[in-house]
Length: 105
Ligand code: FES
Image 1: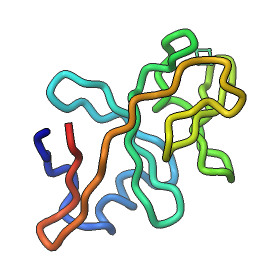
Image 2 (image 1 turned 30 degrees about the vertical axis):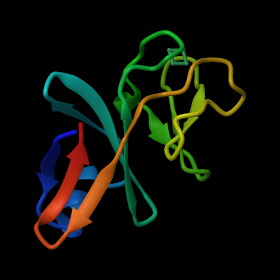
Image 3 (image 1 turned 180 degrees about the vertical axis):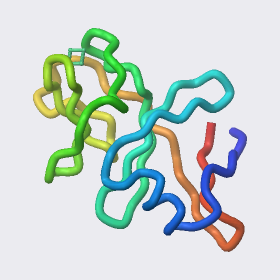
Image 4 (image 1 turned 90 degrees about the horizontal axis):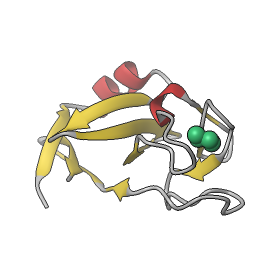
């Protein structure tokens, strides 16, 4: 696994995300980045139901990304759809240290 720097600081991440999910493309992978509470999460951008871009979706109060097309809800921590109607999302690890914030791909 390679660790790719995506932000210099937590404040930079918060400003970039501004409570909305955002598309990140790393090494050809489309990844949905989201900040929930104080924590940054990264899951595959492609909805496992019918392929919509989850970074166009919204976050709910449970820490789920809600797909904009049919409103399936995926847990940002586990990638699991709330009622298991479709496959889990791939989740990517995030690491933070004094050098910045990194995603593992
Ligand atoms: S494409 Fe995401 S819920 Fe249908």
